[in-house]
Every structure is written in structure tokens, then in C-alpha cells.
Picture 1 (cartoon, rainbow, N blue to C red):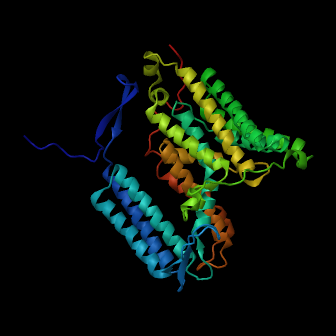
Picture 2 (cartoon, helix red, strand yellow):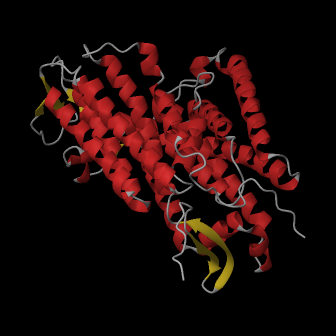
Picture 3 (tube, one colour):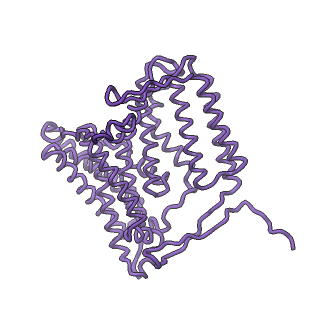
Length: 447
């Protein structure tokens, strides 16, 4: 008997979705081995990144050394600055990236190993880029302040992505995150000025929930196309908040658009840990609330009956209905809660940050949050990491604009594009490679 013919098609296994122990709702096929073409494509891409690092950054780096400052100002325990040779460090890091790419070409990393390899390549490139930026020797690279800025900028994105997780895990596409955040930012500033920051935070959550209810009613009850509906709700939010800003806030900014912002709250002992302390445990209430929301959603989705039922409804609503789950009620509930979280994300832009509302203050952050959701494979932890990556891109743009000199001058307009370029490149490599919940965007009509 001849040997079986080998192909490059992915092997397939099945994954079971349950709503409770013993209650199997559906099985779906899952790829466990990538094709040769994709393995080679990923390997070549990594090698090219390494070559750009070596030839583009390494050969243009300044002749001096790069100094990394890990201290957050003059508070807490002070660590000595770390000095590394600019050109040599960049070239060595680039070579390491090339080696990872070659390993991928030869061995073909898969699953968790490939994800960790991708994270390693990203970190190596970021360190190489920062080393290159500081190699002119004029000033230190402020790592602590860069990370703090990353967390603050990523907080609205993380919350927006969590709103998307709540909706899309249950089968409803939420393109309206941008509009929900915009309404939340407006309500937070208005009610925060009139009645205080806590009232502003509650008002932002409520108005976000109202927007979530609109999304739920039209998509679940009236079966409107969810993508088109999201675009319409975004346009509605832009138009109405713009009108109210001109009609209310612009006429009396002192009485309607000067909210106080939440002050940082330092957690004793933890806040004094070098680097990590000021970064994670000396933040305002919006950041701590983000920690709580991410942790609760992540744990509940995996370890609670609600989470199991939510995932079942997102994968196979008809099968979930047959075992007694109220599919429509669960979708209404989750979409409205997601809207509340998106409203809080908008409040993070006003009462959690700048202390005022401006037209279009979200500047596409709702769409970046949606990209983080996709990049993070529709999981809370993945979306958290993706949002931090996009927040870092924005923080890096700000940090580079403050550098007195760079080895090669970078135009300010190109720097302003960094967050959006990072979003584009990150998602472009994953479209068609990740799988949304099977029933995502599909209306359910009870038979």
C-alpha cells in the first residue's frame, strides 16, 4: 500500500462549546497547523524587519551611546541610568530578529510559540528603535514616563475594546464604539462640570448604555444590518455632540465644560516599587476601574455560567436556544453593558485626562479599539495587549516629537501617523487569519 499523500492544507480538529458541565451546544473545526505559504510569509516578514533594523537603524545610528532613564521623576527609589552603545546594540538586536525569522522559515512556529515569537520580535524592534532615537546622545530616553503615558493613552482603548468583547462574544457587531465613547466624553464633561466628577462618570456610563440599547433594539429587534447601523450611530453621535457643544458648551464653557479631573491615587507600598510602582499603582480612578473591568470580564467569560452561555450564544445561538438559554435577552443585556463600558471609555478622555470636551475628541479611538479587539482575537487579554501596543505607538509619537535631535529627522506629520500606521500594519496581517465568534453579526429569529 502506498504512503498517504502529504499536502500543505491545515490539519483540522474540533472544539466543543458548552453552556454548563455536560451541556454541549456545538462543535466547530479549528486549524492546528498553518500552511507552508503562511509559514514562509511570516518568516520572510520577520527577516525583513530584522534587515530594516540592521541596515536602516543600525547604520544610521549616532556614534554616541544611548542612556535609558527608568525613574519616574524624583519620587521613590532611584535607579541608575542604563547606558548602551547605540550602533552596536541596534545591529545586535536586528540580527536577533533575523534569527527568529530564519527559525520560523526552517521550523515553522505555531500557536502559542508563534505568538510569543511575535511579541519577542516586537520588543526587540522597539528597544532597537529607542536605542537608535537616543544614540545622538543629547538626552536620555525616559522609559518610565513613556510607559506611564502609554497606560494613560491606552486606557480608553482598552475600555472600548472590552465594550466590543461584551457585544461580539454574544454575536452582535459593535461598530458604534466611537459614537458611544463620544457621547460618554460629552456627558462626562457636562455633568462633571455641573455636579462633580463622580456624577460625570455615572452619566457617561448611562448615556453609553442608552447608545448600547439603541444598537441592541435596531440590530436584535428590527434586524438592521449591524455594520451599517454602527456607522449611522457614529454619524449621529458626531452630529449631535457637535451641535450640543456649539449650542451649550461654547456659550458657557465655565459652567458646562470645565470639569475637574480625577487625581492620581497612590497605593501604599506598591506605589513605591521602582518603575512598576509609579506605572501601575499611582494612577487615577479611571485606570484602576479599567483594571477591574478587564479582570472581571476575563474571569467571568471563562469561569462563570454567564460567560459560558455568552460564548455559546456567540457561536451557535440556535443550539443554545434548544437547551433553554434566552438568546435575545442575553444579547440585549450584554450589548447594553458594553455600551456602558464604552461610555466610561469616553469619560476617560475628559474627566480622566484633559478636563474638557472638544468636537471629535475621540479622533477615531473607537475604531482603534475595534481594531484592538480583532488584533486580540476577540479575547479580553488579547485586546488588552493590542490596546497597549496602540497606546505605546501614540506615546512614542509624543516622545519622539520632544527629542531635541534624532539621528535622522522624522517629519512631524509622519510622527502623527504612527498610531494609525501601527493599527494598519497590525490588523492587516491578521485579517483572514483570526476567527470571530461564528454567529457574530448574524441576527437570530426564534423559530
